[in-house]
Length: 246
Image (tube, rainbow, N blue to C red; front, side):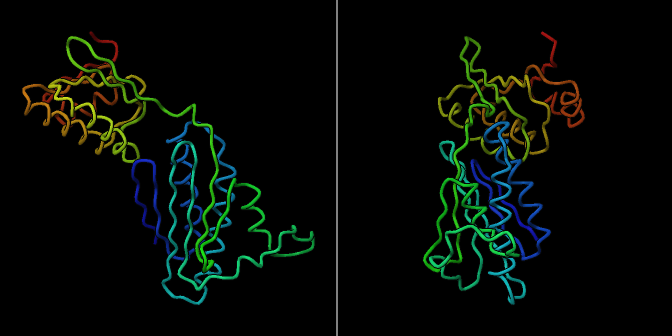
């Protein structure tokens, strides 16, 4: 069993100690980092996270039927912090050897790999919670932009509007709507996917603005997204302009 919770700048997992879950957690974590930070190299994250999860599942959960591992990733000011916790009693992490394992050692490489591929590594007192961090150059992250015209505010999200991004975009729009502007234009240039949660965001924004006597307009909408909105009858709910029109 794997439970995932996605929030702005954060992804949280709770997983049973099935090693197959490690692949799923790492794949979601790599995608999270790229969505938040742009096209960065995720090798260090994937390797360090795999080692931390393997240790938690194979050792921290050993002999505990139904035991679950908790994992949390947060990105703040270009620093990714990863926390992995298991329900076990922990261990004396202070006794971990600082030397690298010998070539003929079959075990004992995990902590050295984490330390080599992270900027910082820390344990809690008990030793059943490991936290590591790594700084990334997030200059390539998707950027939103805002411009003001006589017709109102134009907001360009600069990313797909899907389950993993909607909350972040919602927070940005909430700041714009707090200014009591009754009209908002969303420029979807560069947006290649809108799922049901993205559509729900459109409706929520439009309903808020309509209560102020205004409304939402979408421009530069990709043809396939326009077709989706039309199929959901949203093109009659608010103004939608296909890319290349107008």
